[in-house]
Amino acid sequence: MTAKTQLPIPEHFDHKKVSEVWRVPYQKRAAEAKNWALKHSVQPAFRDKNRICLLIIDAQNTFCLPEFELFVGGRSGSGAVDDNLRLCEFIYRNLNAITTIAPTMDTHTAMQIFHPIFWIDEAGEHPLPAATSITLEDVQKGIWKVNPAVAHSIADGNYSALQKHALHYVQKLSDDGKYPLTIWPYHSMLGGIGHALVSAVEEAIFFHSIARNSQALFEIKGGNPLTENYSVLRPEVLDGPDGNSIAQKNAPFIDKLLDFDAVIIAGQAKSHCVAWTIDDLLNEILARDPNLAKKVYLLEDCTSPVVVPGVVDFTEQADAAYQRFAAAGMNVVKSTQLILGD
Image 1 (cartoon, rainbow, N blue to C red):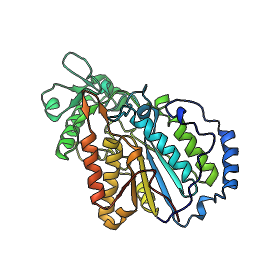
Image 2 (spheres, one colour; image 1 turned 45 degrees about the vertical axis):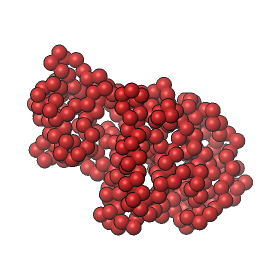
Image 3 (cartoon, one colour; image 1 turned 90 degrees about the vertical axis):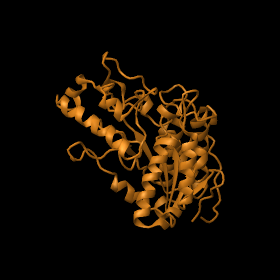
Image 4 (cartoon, rainbow, N blue to C red; image 1 turned 30 degrees about the vertical axis):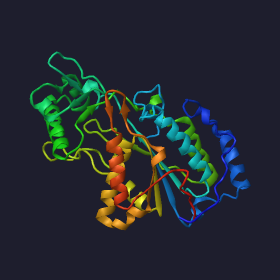
């Protein structure tokens, strides 16, 4: 990318509010964005010769704010908050070069295979979230089994079919070398505050949309009750025990991303949804043209791994994944170093 003059940070941006929930004043920001575009000669996005997409993965309250369900603190303890501060500044400074922003939204309801209500033990107790992984052996031995009560909501009352799927599911995860099924706290609940984008990030995306006349490409993921969906590009398991399709990879969105001249990736969490999205994108690239990896840029200072002090630390796994992505030709950069241009 050739050098292009970076813009100043707009006066409305308050770095102290990145860790808070608040209402974006849309009409006021829209007027300011129009004036900003005129003042700094920001052209409509359709005129871009070099089309750049900023893919923001799951920058939602549920992952990014300390008081919410799955705050990604990293080893620093303030990871996602610091990441989003840098991400907002990156958007504003490069507003004139980013063609499209594509935010993904992790989206869940109560009865899903990775939530506590889906499973019970012999005593009828649900697994403890964030502290329970359900393995193939657990299901085979009956240590954990599907909660019969959920079958009425998600399997038309067919409990045996749902139990059969559960066994197939953990078997498939094991066969594919994926993480064991993790039981997560209820999070990213559709309609809830946790599902919403972090206010400061939402504001930056909205400001970009108005200033550049560029519709944000929102991508929803995670609503299928029968599979996890860390990556926005495909669920963890695509078929059921009888070989029937239960989900499919997100081919239209993959094609959209690879149609851009450059794709920049940030978001949460580095060790899970971000890494697995990049991994799926890399697999698509390797199948089409390995040289396409060169147009992917990973903002390493705008993402953090899952770390629960004294319980689990995925930092090394996340770093190893990024090293593998770099070896494949992707660009691992800091947001302050990447200068976008035509």
